[in-house]
Image (cartoon, rainbow, N blue to C red; front, top):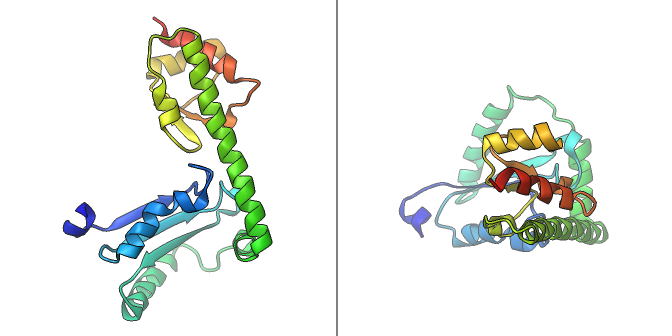
Length: 202
Protein backbone atom coordinates (compact mmCIF):
# COMPACT_ATOMS: atom_id res chain seq x y z
CA UNK A 1 0.00 0.00 0.00
CA UNK A 2 2.82 2.42 0.87
CA UNK A 3 4.45 1.77 -2.51
CA UNK A 4 1.16 2.28 -4.34
CA UNK A 5 0.16 5.43 -2.44
CA UNK A 6 3.61 6.95 -2.89
CA UNK A 7 3.57 6.01 -6.58
CA UNK A 8 6.92 4.27 -6.12
CA UNK A 9 8.57 1.78 -8.41
CA UNK A 10 8.83 -1.70 -6.87
CA UNK A 11 12.28 -3.07 -7.76
CA UNK A 12 12.99 -6.68 -6.79
CA UNK A 13 16.51 -8.13 -6.83
CA UNK A 14 16.14 -11.91 -6.76
CA UNK A 15 19.60 -13.47 -6.76
CA UNK A 16 18.85 -16.46 -4.53
CA UNK A 17 15.35 -17.70 -5.34
CA UNK A 18 14.85 -20.96 -3.47
CA UNK A 19 17.87 -20.47 -1.18
CA UNK A 20 16.03 -18.26 1.30
CA UNK A 21 13.42 -20.75 2.48
CA UNK A 22 14.00 -23.84 0.34
CA UNK A 23 10.77 -23.11 -1.56
CA UNK A 24 11.15 -21.15 -4.82
CA UNK A 25 7.44 -20.25 -4.85
CA UNK A 26 7.52 -18.95 -1.28
CA UNK A 27 10.64 -16.89 -2.05
CA UNK A 28 8.76 -15.27 -4.94
CA UNK A 29 5.61 -14.49 -2.91
CA UNK A 30 6.30 -10.76 -2.42
CA UNK A 31 7.07 -10.25 -6.10
CA UNK A 32 3.93 -12.11 -7.16
CA UNK A 33 1.79 -10.10 -4.72
CA UNK A 34 2.99 -6.84 -6.28
CA UNK A 35 2.39 -8.12 -9.81
CA UNK A 36 -1.10 -9.39 -8.88
CA UNK A 37 -1.91 -6.04 -7.24
CA UNK A 38 -1.30 -4.38 -10.58
CA UNK A 39 -1.16 -0.85 -9.15
CA UNK A 40 2.58 -0.26 -8.82
CA UNK A 41 5.11 -0.68 -11.62
CA UNK A 42 7.26 -3.75 -10.98
CA UNK A 43 10.84 -4.38 -12.07
CA UNK A 44 12.67 -7.66 -11.47
CA UNK A 45 16.38 -8.36 -11.69
CA UNK A 46 16.90 -12.11 -11.37
CA UNK A 47 20.06 -14.19 -11.41
CA UNK A 48 20.47 -17.91 -11.93
CA UNK A 49 24.21 -17.85 -11.23
CA UNK A 50 23.86 -19.17 -7.69
CA UNK A 51 20.71 -21.27 -7.63
CA UNK A 52 21.64 -23.08 -10.86
CA UNK A 53 25.39 -23.11 -10.35
CA UNK A 54 25.97 -21.10 -13.52
CA UNK A 55 28.47 -18.55 -12.14
CA UNK A 56 30.69 -18.37 -15.20
CA UNK A 57 27.75 -17.92 -17.53
CA UNK A 58 26.23 -14.86 -15.78
CA UNK A 59 22.69 -15.99 -16.52
CA UNK A 60 19.76 -13.86 -15.45
CA UNK A 61 16.77 -11.84 -16.50
CA UNK A 62 15.65 -8.25 -16.30
CA UNK A 63 11.86 -7.97 -16.37
CA UNK A 64 9.44 -5.07 -16.26
CA UNK A 65 5.71 -5.55 -15.81
CA UNK A 66 4.00 -2.99 -18.02
CA UNK A 67 0.40 -1.84 -17.96
CA UNK A 68 -0.43 -3.02 -21.47
CA UNK A 69 1.04 -4.05 -24.83
CA UNK A 70 1.68 -0.44 -25.87
CA UNK A 71 3.69 0.25 -22.73
CA UNK A 72 5.54 -3.04 -23.22
CA UNK A 73 6.61 -1.91 -26.68
CA UNK A 74 7.79 1.49 -25.40
CA UNK A 75 9.75 -0.14 -22.58
CA UNK A 76 11.34 -2.69 -24.90
CA UNK A 77 12.40 0.08 -27.27
CA UNK A 78 14.15 1.97 -24.46
CA UNK A 79 15.76 -1.17 -23.04
CA UNK A 80 17.21 -2.00 -26.45
CA UNK A 81 18.80 1.46 -26.58
CA UNK A 82 20.39 0.88 -23.17
CA UNK A 83 21.51 -2.69 -23.83
CA UNK A 84 22.94 -2.27 -27.32
CA UNK A 85 26.14 -0.42 -26.29
CA UNK A 86 26.75 -2.91 -23.45
CA UNK A 87 26.74 -6.03 -25.56
CA UNK A 88 25.84 -6.97 -29.09
CA UNK A 89 25.31 -10.72 -28.88
CA UNK A 90 25.39 -12.06 -25.32
CA UNK A 91 26.49 -15.66 -24.77
CA UNK A 92 23.60 -18.10 -24.88
CA UNK A 93 25.04 -21.25 -23.31
CA UNK A 94 23.92 -20.54 -19.74
CA UNK A 95 20.61 -19.09 -20.86
CA UNK A 96 19.87 -22.26 -22.83
CA UNK A 97 20.70 -24.41 -19.80
CA UNK A 98 18.42 -22.32 -17.57
CA UNK A 99 15.62 -22.41 -20.15
CA UNK A 100 15.92 -26.18 -20.47
CA UNK A 101 15.77 -26.68 -16.71
CA UNK A 102 12.85 -24.30 -16.23
CA UNK A 103 10.72 -25.59 -19.10
CA UNK A 104 11.20 -29.37 -18.75
CA UNK A 105 8.94 -30.57 -15.87
CA UNK A 106 11.23 -33.42 -14.82
CA UNK A 107 14.36 -31.25 -14.82
CA UNK A 108 12.52 -28.43 -13.06
CA UNK A 109 11.42 -30.76 -10.24
CA UNK A 110 14.94 -32.13 -9.89
CA UNK A 111 16.35 -28.58 -9.73
CA UNK A 112 13.77 -27.47 -7.15
CA UNK A 113 14.70 -30.49 -5.03
CA UNK A 114 18.40 -29.65 -5.26
CA UNK A 115 17.74 -26.00 -4.34
CA UNK A 116 15.76 -27.15 -1.30
CA UNK A 117 18.60 -29.46 -0.25
CA UNK A 118 21.06 -26.54 -0.41
CA UNK A 119 18.70 -24.20 1.44
CA UNK A 120 18.09 -26.78 4.15
CA UNK A 121 21.84 -27.27 4.56
CA UNK A 122 22.40 -23.51 4.91
CA UNK A 123 19.53 -23.23 7.41
CA UNK A 124 21.04 -26.15 9.34
CA UNK A 125 24.44 -24.45 9.45
CA UNK A 126 22.81 -21.26 10.78
CA UNK A 127 21.17 -23.29 13.54
CA UNK A 128 24.40 -25.15 14.35
CA UNK A 129 26.48 -21.95 14.49
CA UNK A 130 24.03 -20.22 16.79
CA UNK A 131 23.65 -23.30 19.01
CA UNK A 132 27.43 -23.70 19.40
CA UNK A 133 27.90 -20.01 20.26
CA UNK A 134 25.18 -20.27 22.90
CA UNK A 135 26.68 -23.54 24.18
CA UNK A 136 30.01 -21.76 24.64
CA UNK A 137 28.27 -19.37 27.02
CA UNK A 138 28.44 -16.26 24.87
CA UNK A 139 26.83 -13.30 26.60
CA UNK A 140 25.74 -11.89 23.26
CA UNK A 141 22.51 -12.67 21.48
CA UNK A 142 23.07 -14.62 18.27
CA UNK A 143 19.39 -14.84 17.29
CA UNK A 144 20.11 -12.75 14.20
CA UNK A 145 22.04 -15.68 12.72
CA UNK A 146 18.87 -17.78 12.48
CA UNK A 147 16.55 -14.80 11.93
CA UNK A 148 18.32 -13.97 8.66
CA UNK A 149 17.84 -16.02 5.50
CA UNK A 150 19.87 -16.84 2.44
CA UNK A 151 23.48 -17.63 1.63
CA UNK A 152 25.07 -14.81 3.59
CA UNK A 153 24.88 -13.74 7.21
CA UNK A 154 25.73 -10.43 8.81
CA UNK A 155 27.34 -11.60 12.03
CA UNK A 156 27.44 -8.22 13.73
CA UNK A 157 31.20 -8.48 14.18
CA UNK A 158 33.16 -5.23 14.25
CA UNK A 159 36.00 -4.65 11.75
CA UNK A 160 38.65 -5.16 14.43
CA UNK A 161 37.03 -8.49 15.41
CA UNK A 162 37.01 -9.55 11.75
CA UNK A 163 40.70 -8.59 11.53
CA UNK A 164 41.48 -10.73 14.57
CA UNK A 165 39.58 -13.70 13.10
CA UNK A 166 41.81 -13.48 10.03
CA UNK A 167 45.05 -12.87 11.93
CA UNK A 168 44.65 -15.36 14.77
CA UNK A 169 42.27 -18.00 13.40
CA UNK A 170 42.65 -17.81 9.59
CA UNK A 171 38.92 -17.17 9.13
CA UNK A 172 38.13 -14.60 6.47
CA UNK A 173 35.00 -12.45 6.32
CA UNK A 174 34.32 -9.09 4.76
CA UNK A 175 35.14 -6.30 7.22
CA UNK A 176 31.45 -5.59 7.77
CA UNK A 177 31.16 -9.07 9.31
CA UNK A 178 29.42 -10.73 6.38
CA UNK A 179 30.06 -14.47 6.14
CA UNK A 180 29.11 -16.97 3.46
CA UNK A 181 26.92 -19.61 5.08
CA UNK A 182 27.58 -21.90 2.11
CA UNK A 183 31.23 -22.11 3.22
CA UNK A 184 30.29 -23.46 6.65
CA UNK A 185 30.08 -27.22 7.11
CA UNK A 186 29.55 -29.69 9.92
CA UNK A 187 33.34 -30.15 10.06
CA UNK A 188 34.18 -26.46 10.58
CA UNK A 189 31.15 -24.90 12.28
CA UNK A 190 32.47 -25.58 15.81
CA UNK A 191 35.85 -24.04 14.99
CA UNK A 192 34.10 -20.99 13.54
CA UNK A 193 31.87 -20.62 16.60
CA UNK A 194 34.80 -21.03 18.99
CA UNK A 195 36.81 -18.45 17.05
CA UNK A 196 33.93 -15.95 16.97
CA UNK A 197 33.46 -16.52 20.69
CA UNK A 198 37.15 -15.84 21.30
CA UNK A 199 37.03 -12.46 19.54
CA UNK A 200 33.70 -11.34 21.03
CA UNK A 201 33.89 -12.45 24.66
CA UNK A 202 35.91 -9.44 25.90
